[in-house]
Picture 1 (tube, rainbow, N blue to C red):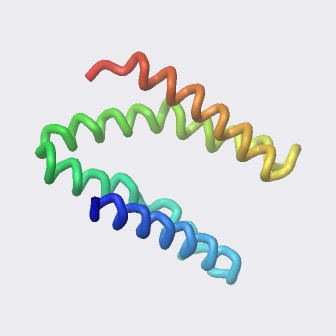
Picture 2: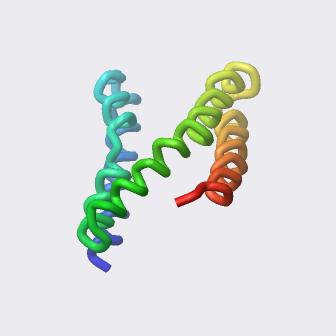
Length: 111
């Protein structure tokens, strides 16, 4: 249970840091924080402790492929739509795109 509480806390801190630095005119720090793989890093530490390095390797391949299938289109939707329809609607469209593609990918992915 402590791992879940720790992961939740770290996720909130990272979100706060990204937002803080972007708003306060430090975009380089904000961008580095946004790109840092904090969630996969923490997840892999816990997966490795519980299930071993093979499980981490299998999961990393899933995430890598899933990034190409779902994350890249998500970001492209936001990139192209934000100037046209505003950031909130573009993010919503990106999330819908991500969820659809990630669900399809997860259903057809072979272990």
